[in-house]
Amino acid sequence: MSESASEAASAAAEPKGGRGAQLKHTGLRSGWTTGACATAATTAAYTALLSGDFPDPVTITLPKGQTPSFALAVESQGRDHEGRTATAGVVKDAGDDPDVTHGALVRSTVRVLPAGSGVVFRAGPGVGTVTRPGLPLDVGEPAINPVPRQMMREHVARVAAACGGSGDVEITISVDHGEEIARSTWNPRLGILGGLSVLGTTGIVVPYSCSAWIDSIRRGVDVARAAGRTHVAGCTGSTSERTVVREHGLPEDALLDMGDFAGAVLKYIRRHPVDRLTLCGGFAKLSKLAAGHLDLHSGRSQVDKGFLAELAVRGGAGPDLAASVADANTGLAALQLCAAAGVPLGDLVAAEAREQALLVLRGAPVAVDVICVDRAGNVVGRG
Image (tube, rainbow, N blue to C red; front, side):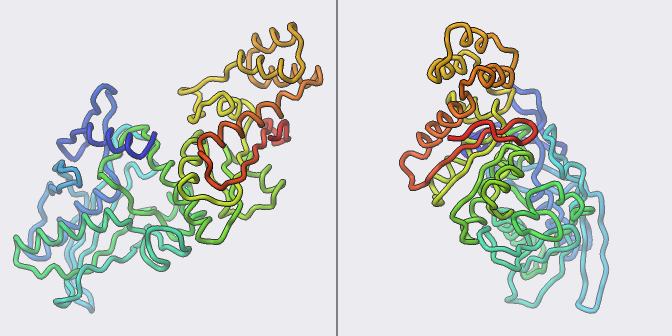
């Protein structure tokens, strides 16, 4: 899904409360981003510091104007050598999206700073720190993205105006078990170490929008460019990653976990070019790209055996082989039929996938090559 489509879907969610809302037409519940949860927790903690009481539930305003309310799972006040603090925690509800942070406890600890200090962000346990350039945050900064930071600043200002504070605060965001959860995200590869990122542009998680994956692809390109990489590879999975490393010796920060989102890789690299792009993936998936599909997910595009039969004919297949390819159960079966007859279907698919990639790149100064592999990682086509 494109960024604009994801934003449109978010706007359609119309959330009314802290437990998410049902998306129109889909029956799926939307949820809340980590940034929205951090904003709610920060609002409650700062309110408690100034008034003595935690608002529960706490209501916030999202960037598009929705006003969800969040129940507090944690609330405490204390004092250390630097002064009084208040901590509030919200359990993230990602709705019906398979978000790895669903159910995570997001905490915010707020401390009042001297007048003129502004708002200072810190990474607590479970929140990562940026260690590589190329992200929208400076190296050394806590991995709290710009929109969540702005949301928290705005809500701190509102609480300060309502309760008589200066708005000068230190905000420490933590996520219980965040360092463990982050191992299953792109963060380590992007150079975000020690935990999760606090994300979100609308405050709303749209089920199966895949926006987080696409955003990770974009950040991967940014990190590779910032590291001076001139050759990157979009791979459909771990097998194709191993193949492209073996073929080209690319370092980890030049590998893009493309998954099914070939279009996302190509469109972003069109706007942010690198000298060379290798696309590497399973034969069946790349046959979909060859046929013009930019989303390679099995639920959204299918292997077109008729198209494969046409390619086979271009490669010298006779009528009987072409008919067998068109009638094959799977793309792999079609590939095997052609291999037995000496027809280079893998190379034909790779070459056509390269042509489709160049069409999407629209003349961007990017050299493209394509590698098709089988399930064992053996190269079965080059283009």
